[in-house]
Image (cartoon, rainbow, N blue to C red):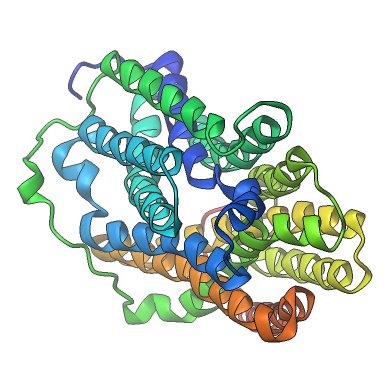
Amino acid sequence: MVGDRRGWLPCLLAGAVFIVGMTGTTLPTPLYPLYQEEFGFSELTVTVVYAVYAFGVIGVLLLAGNASDTIGRRPTLYGGLGFAAASALCFLFADGLAWLYAGRLLSGLSAGLFTGAATAYVMDLAPPGGGARATLVATAANMGGLGCGPLLAGVLAEYAPEPLLLPFAVHLALVAVSAVLLLGLPETVRERQPWGAVRPQRPALPMQVRAVFVPAAIASFAGFALFGVFTSISPTFLSRSLQVDNHAVSGLVVALAFFASIAGQLGVSRFGVARSLPLGCAVLFASLSFLAGALVASLLVLVVLAAVIGGAGQGLSFRAALSAVATGAPVEQRAAVISALFVVAYTGISIPVIGVGALSDPLGLEEAGLVFTGCMLLLVASAAAYLLGRPVRTGRR
């Protein structure tokens, strides 16, 4: 290791940089109703603006998913911070839809670089024997950062001036602080190569992992699709259908889903991978049922329950899915198989969300949401039935 300065302080500082990077990706969430008023666009446009982020993430995963192993952790994270800063600037100067699309795309590129590089960096910097705790730090930083974004933006939009400017100015300042923090952290990749050495990493699906990959991918798709709907249209639903005009409340509801995901991921250590996958599907099923009830009855308490339960189900099912496919894949193809799972998961953030937006104009937001929940209920139930009939066999817990 270059500059062998491992320990919990460097590990936690890397986690703090991870939080800042992921916070920017969800920062616009409670602000979409304000952008609709400002620029006068439809629900479909809201979902497309949101989904552009997922296309950016998928592009980076396919084209530069192994960047940090090649050029080093710090250069990759600096690249991610650069995209995050550019995204914040797009929102700061936004005077039309084109700026929002550009900001979301840049945010996706930032998240694509951060997700793998920051996770590996946190684990690299942990002291010997601290691998399990470092994994928890990385998980908490990832989902915690995603949860901090809507919470920060919602509070600033509600209680501070310039609601469409101040959240991004604050995030730009946090990005600058993170860049300074990175200067004091050691590089952990010994043999680094130039950017030109980064090669596309194509997903792979070898025969021996296909049986577990299909239900794992379905569960991951459903969990990320639920997150996608919450983070794209729930603020509008809360405002228009429930008359919740407080942006801080809207941000908190979304943040609860991400914070609950951390608790769900911790549950895999207790229940084991084989039981966590079908259990996660069952929890997602319950969350989708609460979401359907919220859409029909227009009750805030049901929206909150759907957020908390859905976050826990997503965390439980996705971490178990990741462990199951990583364990079942051949060592030489493990990274490619994991990339395939992430591509499916992030497709869940984009395609269903756009579908809800497209249906909301002819059907209305509530009816479009019910169509979405019905389709997801069928998917999750199918995955759970398959997993109960053919339990995942793995030696890991």
